[in-house]
Every structure is written in structure tokens, then in C-alpha cells.
Length: 464
Ligand code: BES
Ligand code: MN
Image (cartoon, rainbow, N blue to C red; front, side, top):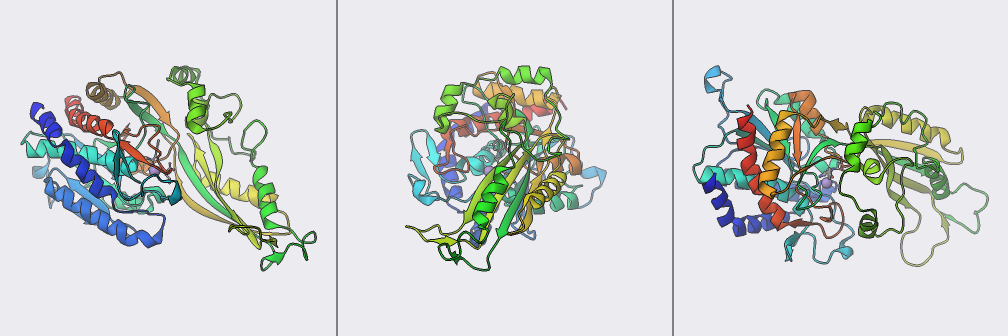
């Protein structure tokens, strides 16, 4: 282990330089114009994995390719002879990133990495390139120092997480045998702070919809026709405003039907998390917090379902005024889900409710987007305990167990298709600005993440 840790220390500068190279690819999966950038990014990653000594394949899909990189040469036959006695873990990550817009709010261009203070600023630095690179660096340290890895590892790094991981679902089913493993490890969540390393044992699910209301066949002069014809922008506002009541509850019949209530014990545990409301408000830049009545902010953002408007479009958006009744209005919505809600049922429910509320003066279209189920695993498992020990050794502080509000849609497929639970060991700080302008990754956490990963394989092998 000494040699591994020393290697990590010695090569830190190069690791940072490599992260800089990696984040230069604008691998934005939501925008078709970046298809080529995703490919170049995947090629870079393939080369990198081969360089550090992994058996690497870039597997094409109907969308962006999936990288599979193994510490053990895959055997051609599934004969018993080639079987390893070591436990096998799958490490998941994603090389795609969220759109960087609005560009003008970035202090440095999003795809030109900038080192400021102890952080590297770039889109994707934290979500998720820096986080899975930490694991790759740890494995490199084992391989290049000739230290025996206590586990067999398979890295699965995809390019469609930020758009719902559709192709990875089929890929897992098709490669179920090769990917059979004792567990999955993911660093793609948050940690409370450098002194509060965090293990996440629950994620919310997600269900995305886009609703479009169409009125007149073209934009109309609002003076000539206004007053006599339905305005789709107004209709959309009225429609959306009815989706939440004054207590912050989602006013869609049946929405809460499958929601598992929070147990008293869990509420007690969540109440012990370090949380300062004033600091939180300041950090978010809001005068007051708002959420479902009867729940604390921590509960609201991690263990309760939500409905959010993510985007709203209609009418004239340019400078100055333009007096029109827009022909259409549209909204992008996502619902965050908790056990035991399913994206399929929620999509149906919300769609039917929107149709019911829609006035006759406009036509409604609802398009279903991506979906992902919520994830929950008991915090008492032995693998989880091994994860906690690795965090404690690397960070030098007692780790915190947490539920996260974000989603990683594929996590439930790992469970359903491979029967594997996931250890979520997040390395993103709350102020890393994931999905926002000025995303960054703390380089101190980067280094600790590598150390954590190095220890993790020892801890996981010890319990096998
Ligand atoms: N890394 C995040 C998920 C995350 C972040 C989970 C923080 C918990 C805490 C991931 O890359 C992400 O953003 N996922 C999307 C999924 C969606 C686009 C299908 C999300 O949660 O919005
Ligand atoms: Mn993300």
C-alpha cells in the first residue's frame, strides 16, 4: 500500500494535467452538435485506460459509446479455469456533461480548464470526469507499482448519463454474464465537506416530461386580436400553477400513493446532519426557503418527491418588446421520485392530469422524456461498512451516511440486471456548481478520492 500511496503523491501534478485534457472535450450529450466531441472524448479515455494497463474496449451503441476497461483479461470461454478467486467490482462513471449555457455567466470558458485556488474550473470537472478519474488513478498506481490489486475491477464509463442512460440499460442486459459482480462503486454524488466524507445510500428517481400548448396557427398582433383568443403562454402558466398547493404539496391526485413514509428513526438520523439554515439560504441566494410543509429542508431535498419546472419557453425572447400573442408555449418538467414511486406510473398520472386541466382554447401535447427509478439500500450492509472505513482512512474524519436528492438512473438497473448493490462514494462539494456556471472540482478532494479508492479495494477484499 505504501508504494501505491507514494505513487499517487508523486504523480499528482500529472493527474491534474490529465484531468485538464479530459475536461477540454465539450462532451455535452443533450446537444446533437456535440456528437463528434463525445466520440473524441471517448477515444481519449480509451487511450488513457490502455496506457495505464487496463484491457479496454470501446463498445458502440445506438447513441454514444460505452467504455469497458478491466484489470483482468476477459476470458474467451466462460470455463471455470479462467475464473478468479478475487471479488469483482464494477466502477461506473460518465464522460458526458451537462450543457454549459449560459456561457456569459462563466468566469472562464467552460471547456478551457482554469486552475484557481485549490480548484479546477471546467464543465464536467466534478460531474463526473474528475470523480471517476480518481478511481482510474488509484488503479494505475496499483498496476504501475506492481502491487497486487485485492479485487478484480471493471470500469464501465458511459456517455449518456445526463440524458437518462437509455443505451446502457440494454448494454447491461446484453453483457449480464461478463459484468457479473459483487458490487458496484460510483463516485458521482456529493460529500458534505472535506471534514464530512459522505456515503450515500439512497438516490431519488426521476421522470421527465415536456408539455406544449398550441393556440393560434401563428403569432398574432396582440392589439388586433388580444382579448378574443386564448393565449398559450397564459394558459400554460395557469396550468402549471395548479400543480402545487399552498403547502408545497404536489396537487396531482394519486401522486403520493406509493411514497414510502419516512420512519421516525430515519427522521432522527437526518436531523443529526450538519445543516445551518442561514448559511444554506445565503449559499443559495434566497431570502427564504420554501418546500413541502411538515418536512425539514434535508428531508425535502432528499427523501420527498418533487415536481419542478426546468425550462419555460414562449413568445418573444429578444431585446425590447414585441406585441404578440404567441402561437405556442412549452415547459420542461421533472419529477423527483422516492421509494416506491415508478417513473412509468408518474408519467401517466401527470400527463392525464395536465390533459384534464387544459382549457379547450389550446391544444396540448405531452412528450415523455427519460426516467429512472429511485434507489435505496439499507445503511447496515457489510460492503457499506467497508466503504465507510475507506472514507475514514482517506479523509481522516468520520463519514456521514446520507440520502441524496439527485438521480443516477442506471443504479437500479445494476440491481435489477446484475443483482448488485451500489456503493456511492461522492467527491463533489456542495459548492462545486454541478449543472451550473463555474463548475469546479476541488483538487484536495481529488487526491483524497484517489487514496480512498486505493484503500477501498483492500477493505472490500477483506470482507469477501
Ligand atoms: N452526478 C449527478 C447525480 C447526483 C448529483 C446525485 C448529486 C446525487 C447528488 C448526475 O450526473 C446527474 O446529474 N444526474 C441527473 C440525471 C438525469 C439527467 C437523468 C440528475 O440528477 O438530474
Ligand atoms: Mn450531472
